Image (cartoon, rainbow over all chains, first blue to last red; front, side):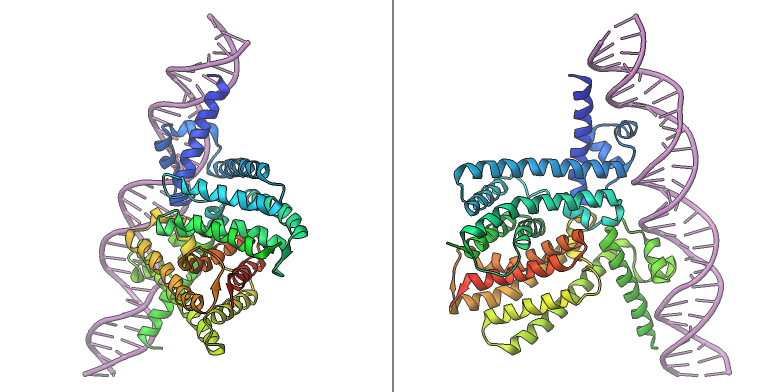
Length: 205
Length: 205
DNA sequence: TTAAAACTGTACCTGAGGTACAGTAGAACA
DNA sequence: TGTTCTACTGTACCTCAGGTACAGTTTTAA
């Protein structure tokens, strides 16, 4: 194991453990002691990797968005193979996303972006901007295909394509909250399916 | 001023101040000192009204759900006057809700239910159950009317009426998160309008 | 074998959350 | 008018979390 790998695995372990605790206790509700106990590391070790909690927050958001984008790209890559039709690509993506959630062993862990939004004053401008840029990336993923779809299909609503693109994020965030409250992934799966149904009804041949 | 009124106004002031700070800093991120400074009260005064932070949390959720239900009932009462058609009642409600959000001076303050969901381990079973019951009340508000609507209209999707009822909560919670990230109520208004559009397209005469 | 990276261990400071309780202002009631 | 209770204020104190600092130890690459 190289030095880099050793470092990365410890750093990654800290981030992974921190994220899972934070999603259930909030950022302020999670102590560094909580994190180091579960990551099997000492306080000194923690501060070797991160200058403090603020730096951890930034690293967590960066890591979360990277992981998320990787998954989204994979799902869209698979769906893009199936069809050239932009609407079918989106619907394929949503079906794959729903299946992925259905196959989770436990309730969806939650979204760091949403969690941090309800504690936004704890973070500096930089982290808040990272979050905003992250959501804009999700928007773009859908907006591009929805705009192409609106050329081939007749759109049955006046609401902007941008808002319809954001509706994915909205349904997922809303669905996650419902799933956490009801302690079942069904709610999230259903909200994603409902977004799919909306697109099916709003774009007619 | 009666004794009761004096008490109630102080207690109410504490709750109101606490809610607004908590929605921006999280529950754990909000200190009792933060609350008492902004509520112009001493620590002793705070502990006269609440036995501690846990009791405050419970009171906050109870108060939030009561206020929320009062607003929802008012909006539905107004819409129920306009029409006997259950679908039109819901659409009237959504339009009024959207207008209410549009008329807010500042960005929507956020939803305590969503905020607490991302810090759920900080609260005991009782508070978590209060939150769950609150969401079930919102579900019922829509489900009753949607079921009646499904008798008069042809429903264009297989997804359950319950999930369509929960979609209101989902769109609002998702819309609030988007609005907070983009620092504009437009996103929330649009997501509510999109739910309206979904219902319009899903229920055909 | 050496030097740097990746830690451990300890000690210490500040401030938040919370407890306890004695004292006091003001309304209500007799 | 004085009494009494509610609704506080003020103070003092305890514990633990967040964070700092840094010296010492192990691990790894060259």
